[in-house]
Length: 67
Image 1 (cartoon, rainbow, N blue to C red):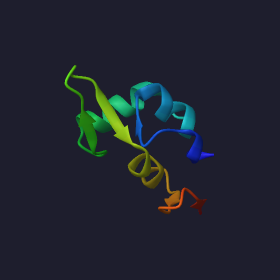
Image 2 (cartoon, rainbow, N blue to C red):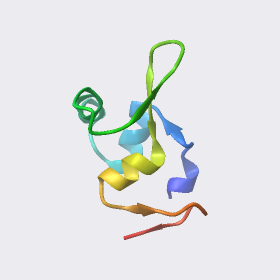
Image 3 (tube, rainbow, N blue to C red):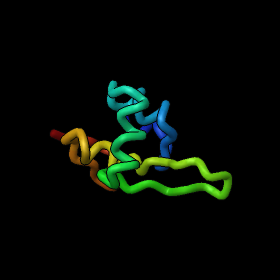
């Protein structure tokens, strides 16, 4: 399923991937619990592998997930 999502996720994509609320990702970013990429426009993107790692799903480089 994760291979359908880009490497860098916005809040909505991260929420759709995990089933968690979008505001939860804002909190994780503010508390420096998830590494983000800040775009030139000032928005934050979440790394897909970091999001999956946070929820306990192991991500392998060939786009396969396991638990």
